[in-house]
Length: 352
Image: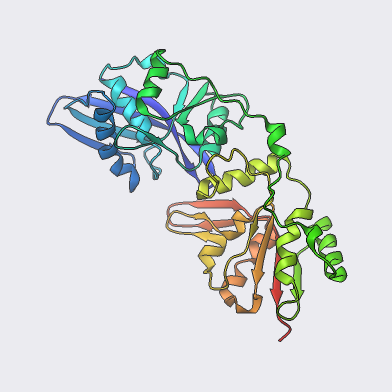
């Protein structure tokens, strides 16, 4: 029997819908995943099999073929574990197919059937809403992040069997609601405040002008003058993030795996201070499958380059495009991705 479950994958900082087709046929027991699966996707067959058995379900001893469509785009990550497991349950008639209609599923499975968080829950929820899905089912650890998207029901489960119990109606899970207005008014108490600075009137005046106009800054002074102290406090006098800016910042952090556990939305302007030994790929992003770099992680906030002359020339040269265009385009043989990178650049150096 054939089952079709809908999931999604992240490409750059955006997501696209993936159809997970599961077919059970006669033949020697086997498990094959097609559709350009990479790394953790291939290993998912071992997690899925153990999770189904340990969660109390039957693992059919048949030939299992899983197709991830579109088949010409590489799939990465562990988020396909849950849709594959549900696809096997539907294809083996353990749960009815109509229970998952209009739902988008994602999540990593542990060997005991527990659901573990994945990256990119926010962009996936946005893609699900744009595609017209009724709801998203995902691990409970990701539910607050995905629930900031209005217009779609988001439900989180701790285990595979609790999710199946929700689908069958035995123990329904209520959709999670997030108060966006309260989130946007939050402020991190641990942030260093610009008001703490005593003296340095000229430097503070310069940073206030830079914050008002979005200008880049070069701080020049002897060691101990307070250059780093001032730079770290610059984000606290920048205008508050709008909802659109907060969503874009959170998407980047979610894809990079830097969104703190339980954090629904990043409402504080980011501050990134990479070491001067960073490579050009670490600064603007890179890899065989490009990931966002420091310039994208600083999007909407401040990128601080301490000891500016110590950075290698090729590293500083790659800053030209993000500083001019507010974005960075990474081209590889298989794809070309564009990441947002609009930030205030603050450099600090000694006079000699």
